Image 1: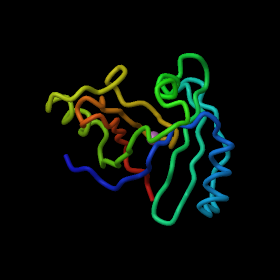
Image 2: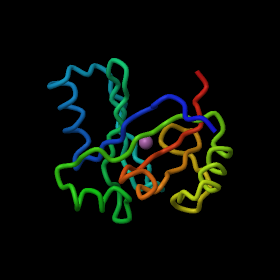
Image 3: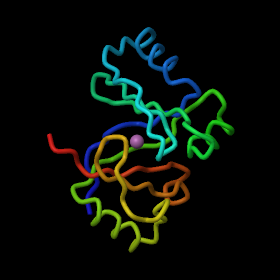
Length: 139
Ligand code: CO
């Protein structure tokens, strides 16, 4: 199993529209997607595209949001996860499990905000860093 490109950095924010404005006005980001509500994932998401990076802005959506707890600990928001691409999400999941890492949720890949299957690896396995692995998008 080989980790591919860094796809995006996830950043939790209390107000996604404000955050888009900040990346545009303070950092000159010219591209941001619309804000999309993923009720079943408990998040509102927008992607801001910069020179060689993409920031995934996450705002909690609903009471059960996984981002809700993060914002309780970090009320102003902050860096939430890193997302790397993998060629085969099932092979990557099997590798993680075999290596003793904890895959969050059911342990099965599910369709994330990018429309491709993803898994999340528990922060305890990566020095406090939540890691998302996503099936490589077709380019
Ligand atoms: Co992500």
